[in-house]
Image 1 (tube, helix red, strand yellow):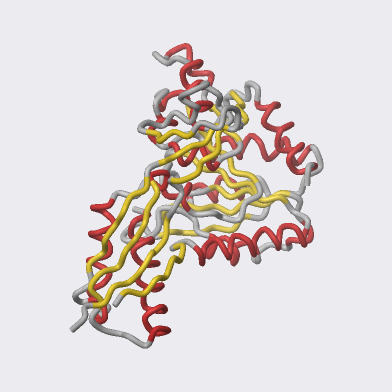
Image 2: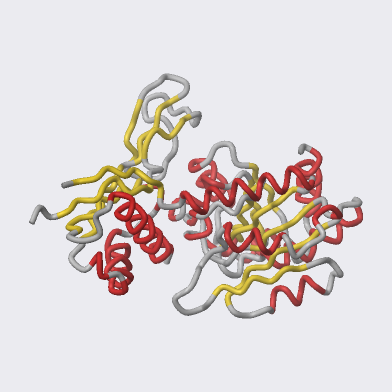
Length: 220
Length: 117
């Protein structure tokens, strides 16, 4: 005997992600999920971006997902903005932030006072792409040191993201890397993705990322 | 690593469905469908399923059967359809990047089969 089921295994997560989008709509904030491999510069990017966005009048909070340490949250909390820390377990636990941990984290904030919430996802190019966080926009940060072939190796990540931040452009001069090949590889996976090249460390072209985020918030 | 979470989800959905069907033993196969876009490693999912099922007596003899679905695209420009063998999301006929994915995104449990004893 065989029973037909046809049920998506991520249905529970996808439902919660939908609930999160409803909360964002009702409370009037924008949720941006930032993903990357470990060490691409997500935290530095946020450290540089947030003060600029604050100057533009945006009220911001961060949901920090990090494996067992609070190191990243401590860096963000110095900026005097609300931070919700999610610790995923290092052993046998999660390698991504699912909607089920984002929803309670959101409720730690006074949502009516916020315009923009960033999720700093766990550093990993595979699993976070799979689990919808309920974010309105998905960013992938890819640094120039990672190699031009990364988009081809992790196509789902580049398919689910609307924006790719190419970080650490200050290092290009020291590297044997081909920027146009990296851009071509990203576009080959997702022709609609926005590309922003910057250096979170030196601040070079960070303005473009700032303006982009402001326009995304205003578009909603 | 996401295979572990997916195996856990498979098991809880199967548990719910067999309760609904009023049949809680003799599960022989669980048929699972994974599109290539989902980057599921079948061996890893199999392993996770086999580890997680140890706590579930109703799955003692159950085997997970995974079928993988290739990534197929349809060109919005010339309407040609192609199966992708490598991650180049572009029409093979007219080179247009304006494509839609028509299969390869699947991630679902298709059915459960019981032994007929």
